[in-house]
Length: 402
Image 1 (cartoon, one colour):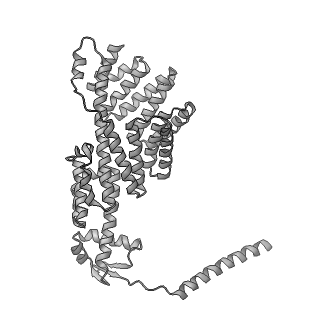
Image 2 (cartoon, rainbow, N blue to C red):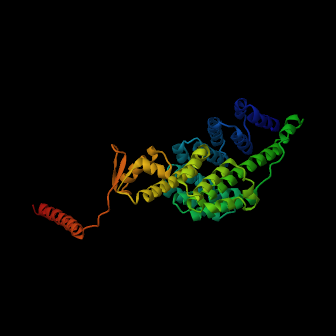
Image 3 (tube, rainbow, N blue to C red):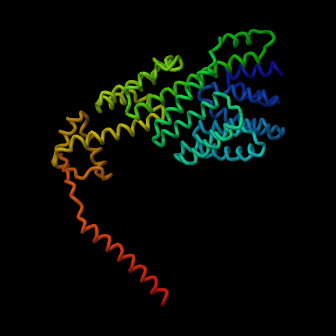
């Protein structure tokens, strides 16, 4: 059995397509979990992993392996989420929560509630996402929560606070994530263990897995540490305190090791552009690092929102002294293309943030002066509105009499 499992593991690493038939052999529960988890290292293998999980779930259900069944369903829900099959993921999560609450498995409940929170967040249902995360934290408070899982809870708490524009609280959660992962960080071991397994006359797959799991865990922790640091930089930018961003890199070894990370360098360039109070430099920093920024939905959305806000504020400041002004002159002052300025002015007029019209024939913006409200006019409107309510009420009573 050990030799067969070892063969499957090596095939998963080197020739994943040839490893699938080996799953037809009956393994014990831990061995099935090991083989399923090994597929996570293969890029672009989400569909293969989903099929493997489905087959393993059927086998676990036929063998009455309830604990393994729940573990595999949890894995499948995560795979559905990663594959953007949110309806399938949510359906499976709801079933899992029902089953886990019956056996009161707190640790599994924490992880499944966290997956539920992620799904609702992607679906833009922030209230349900917060409720799921609160349930996860409630379950976590009654048990010992491993640092990586606690860090995942803190990270997502920060993300949800960002969505509510509470960047100060979000920053504190991201800081806790970074520090929590630092205390749990596992140095990467040598990868020579794989060669030893292949050349050994008596393969020891447990030591091989232990070594490989350390490598995977180490990489995963580093990625989450970097993500937490990036979000901390985002919070400083959104709080309009970009001058504090460079100092974050000096927060111990946990942050300083990402000093040369492309994404961290990109965020620092955005912070520096904001510090210069130049909308042109800010837009240039976003454009130069567009690929990196677009790779993270949270960073992309909030920096786009900030840019839109800053652009609107700058336009209002520029046009304040004028009653009529050429759009090309505004674009020259703000150092942006005419098309962008014209589009933003149109949006501001439609949103009632600017009182005026665009004269496309002459390429001008005509700004209306805000007139003082006429108290008599407002009172007349109020009287007419109240009279309308009285007439409607009398009509209803007359209908009842008839």
